[in-house]
Image 1 (cartoon, rainbow, N blue to C red):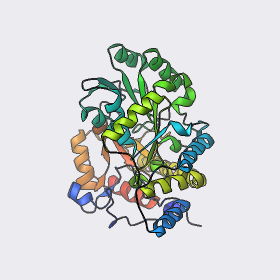
Image 2: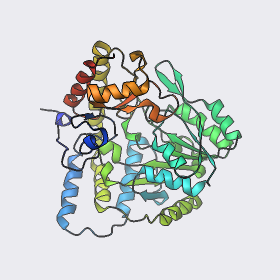
Image 3: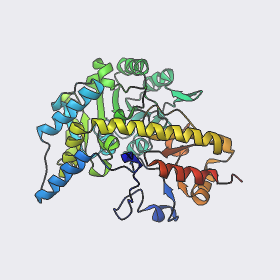
Amino acid sequence: MNNIFDRVIDRTGTSSFKWDFRAEMTGIPDILPMWVADMDFAAPEPVINALAQRAAHGVYGYTGHPDSFFQAVSRWFEQVHGWGIEPGSMVVTPGVVPALNMAVRAFTRPGDRIVLQPPVYYPFMWAVENNEREIVYNPLERADDTWRMNLDDLEEKFRAGARMLILCSPHNPVARVWRRRELSELAEVCKRHDVLVVSDEIHADLAMPGFRHYPLESLAPELKQRLITCTAPSKTFNLAGLQVSAIVIPNPGLRKKFAAAMKSAGLGLSNPFGITAAEAAYRHGLEWRNDLIRYIQGNQDYLVAFCREYIPWARPLPLEGTYLAWIDCRDAKLDDETLKKRLREVARVWLDDGPMFGPGGEGFQRMNIACPRATLKKALHRMAAMPLS
């Protein structure tokens, strides 16, 4: 029987940001978009069925957040991650990126310093800078084929007055799944300096075989009064366009301030299809998610083997979590702008350029490998045929 993830789905004509706007954004109509982090897989069948049933109702009015939604979220994280979330501690937002911006606005003031750990997901930087706060970098350190946190440097940044850390766990783009010890040590530093931690755990469900994601709150309950955890079904089940996230804020005072920031931005009710899809995914999507992880691991294995044989200048680093391959391209001996231009205009493959992710991203490219194997092969063959000079 064919693997459901091998099915190539034509996404053109669906207003897909990834596929329908590629010519407009790059000027190259047939470029392969392997950059933005949404998958080219259909959502789980129970989600599709639930959406069809909801659509058939015919009335799509203002939609609140039923208890069944919070119960589904709570049950999922208890079952999959051993993390008991109190349903009343959640606030629903239209995505994690809006939640990051809301947290910056609610808990800091213009000019305040916020710590980021680059190379890191670039909307973190936008959330700080667009709200007139100051980025303080605590760069990750290279350690052979992996990356680690520099907690001594982090402590210095807190001593110098930074009062918030935006954590990426699992980390995008370096694909680290932080170990229990690493997170426990981080929590100690944050607790010692009474720092507010905003933990983006949107990739929590996508730890690869042999790795385990630990929700920060589950390891450091003593930090929970200064902790905001961002969760969503969007990466796990390919629901990004439905824009629904559950933000966990145990501290009632912080939750009230966050809700006030939401209200000031005119945000409150949700897309009815987002609520329906999220609840169906969390209740019925576990087997699909497990199959997905195995398929992504297979794509990563194929990527590593192909690059080793045919693209020696591109070396994918170990993928512990996410579906975003972090590829060391420094052996190409090209500056970042030249490599970007050659990949797009000659190979006609659109990746995310390492420098977008801040200090430490130089010489790297990020590739979304959550696609049918045939699409990945097509991209890699184009890259292999690309001359470096």
